[in-house]
Image (cartoon, rainbow, N blue to C red):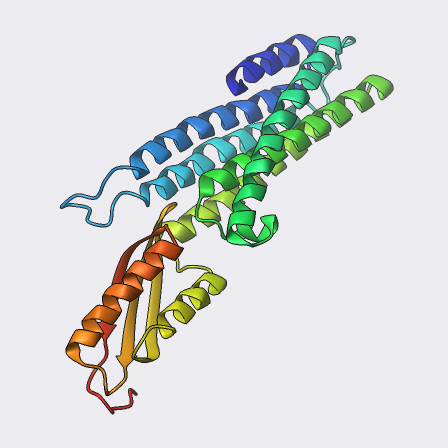
Length: 293
């Protein structure tokens, strides 16, 4: 759909002499390439762990998503800004009917896509008992975040392009069309920065959100014969893979058998409550009766 919209916008922009429409074509092309790269990311991240990669390939999703942000949004953004500046003083076309038709159809299609993304976002937020905004800020599924921001930016970009065309047609001044192109480029760059930061943060290793960590700590502390959870480390390995490592102080009265049973039960409870928890490492701490420094 995005590829078809790209071609339609480009034809309308070239025939109608609109810089904003050409920039919107670059915007849709960036969306198309981004979605192709996200598809590759999801496919690669689903590979099963092996001897060379014992924790799986989940982080490849963040690598491909970061590349998508860098090479498509930034490229589209810089093109739109440059093209907008070059078009500030061009002669405006007399007929923008084709451009308006393409913008209208694109807006309907993008609105449908955005509505479906919002439905998915609300469903995920309800499952985790958080607000959609909180989920969007903390979700390790950067593909969902990318699609949401892409669709939102697409709707805003279409509005900017339409506004630029309307003012240019009303005044005969190409300044408005060129300015709309520049604003579309700035919008693309902003989305690129947000998505790039989110993916790089997860790529280099990021812990779970504070609320999730506290829930895991509470689950561990509720275990039988546990005096305290001394250290708790969490790591987001991929969109659907989490590692938890904890150093646990068992009560002095706990036997070796009780400690082993308690660790197995804790791991089972964590996996059952949080399906994304794929690796759990629990280490009984030190000697009984000794306070850690």
